Image (tube, rainbow, N blue to C red; front, side, top):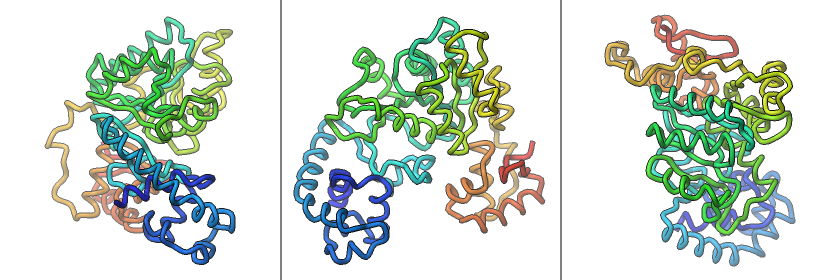
Length: 364
């Protein structure tokens, strides 16, 4: 029953992700939003006369649409994830503009230990495709989840190679999950469901549209611990993804290209403007990110038993590599103050080292 109201909120016109979270925060639940009187709604910060009126006028229609959506989702094996659900991606939840509701179909976790976004031009060259294939093959040693957008060019090569190397791969869609775009990639999208999946913020029946793709790109950036731009022009989706990744405090890597080549210009520009590290190899990137190869993680690397808070922080750093204090506080649930105390203790024990910019990593 609670999910019915969570989905229904997404069908109230002109109530976006931020207002949805504001309403739920003050009312206590999505269901209570629909049961709160207009007068009380008007007392909520940022909720004006127009918004309160829209909720009253559209609640019946929104609930009907939500009921139909839940039936279709159940029929097609699609999960609807509200931002308060435990299965909702933690990397995304912490962002102010995160979708309040996600549509998810697949057989992978959205909270993997290590995720890499791979993006680039739709008009990939042979060089770009080869580099992408090599990157994914080398990421197999780290068991990274591969995130991309199912588009032509670099995106689809990344997904295809992930399937080949048995790495979970997730496509973030610029359309609804019942409108696979481009349609030529439907067979690969279906194969991804066995070890990966498809993710969208758009309700059933939503066709691909130009404004949807920058929105899609922000989710790719947010879900990724690192974003690799393989080939890109000076304008386009790949650079938008890189821009979001920088805003979200994610690491960005760009594959350098030949001067004068259109689809090298974007990557070279990112490097020139210090918005991306030069990508030379997965091994070099792993060193910068403090990743460990899956097969090298053994019990001998574990410290002696730690207090609960310190153990939680240490475990997160070991899983994810370098992390910002705020992110550690969020994902551990400790809060900034407690997380800082735990980190200080771990530093004294020689288990953790501090890095510039309030970042921390496991001490080597």
